[in-house]
Image (cartoon, rainbow, N blue to C red; front, side):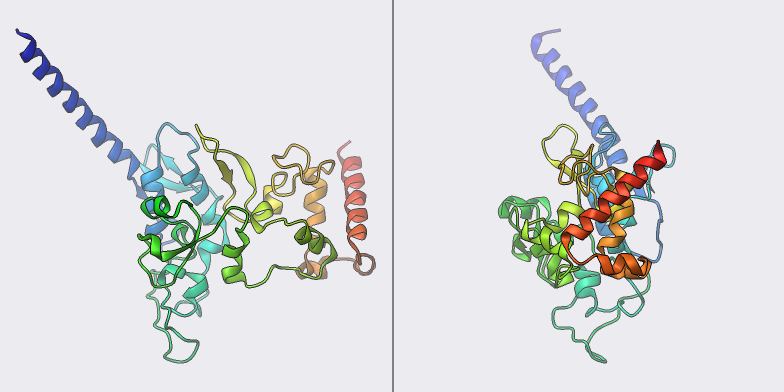
Length: 300
């Protein structure tokens, strides 16, 4: 058998193996999602995990961020109880919001820019078709991101999300612009402890999307996507053992006990005497230290 024939055989075998590998990869990398919430249309968010899913990664950030894991037996994604699917963003349909006006914040990809808050001013969104605040609300797709030079942007309602023109770029350090696009104001302004953080330029994502590691094989940060501060202690507050060390010296237990006192909407939980004492940032720090002492004693 001459060299030319051997070369042809080798090339044929190579492409046959490549085809088999590709078919196997496609079967695994594009699995069917489990019907976690049949009353929602999660095809957009599941579409992201389908492309980013990697059998070998064991913690690839895309499934983690969405809140699913791949089940080798059923060949489908299962709900983990974490990530975006555990957040209010994925469950933002409160019946009255099921229309193209309220969708401007509750499901931006389905919003109509011209829709108004009045009878007949917005079209209803069909039952089972509500998407929620999905990935593409904040993240341009790959092609658009290459043009924009950033994987974070404010989506322009009603535009083709596959294009770069559909997003206003959110630059590093300006991530609050994206959050405040819907939330309008930072919560608890006027609270002395929060005001101190805002002056120090603490961003929404520093607490609500805390860093908990690196994406496998990269130097890119993994961030929690359930937006739950207390649940993600120690990373969200920087207590001992965290990535950021914003507040070293406080245990996770003491911090979880302290967080409710920070938020005005939890005022009903406070003893009257405590509420009267929390007038300055120093008062909050004093309470945190007290809770730290109490939790330290209880664990000894």
